[in-house]
Image (cartoon, rainbow, N blue to C red; front, top):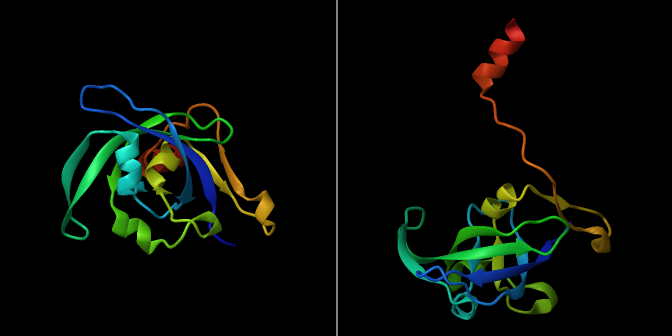
Length: 151
């Protein structure tokens, strides 16, 4: 099982609310990544507003940009998300498809919001993503479900 990539559309949102043009990139799908990350060049092309933010994990200041994302798979919706702008983080992930430089890591934050599922297969051509339709089921606390079962 190798890396899974997906075509993702991205556009920046400026401070005045205006949006840039849609750009399409190959993104590495990383369900273990808490947030999505893009390269500086992609952030410049997307033309979104950047906000400096302190990253408690590595103790560094990182630029964060508000963008709209859409995975180009069946039923994956457009979601506004903050993404981290950092070339060093992306470089750690290695090259992208076909040995080209990786432009984006699509993290758990977007996947959870769109109810995305990863489709793994022994055949590389059968791997990919899908997004579930409808609203997610309501969350119930463990305490509530235990009490209901005890009655």
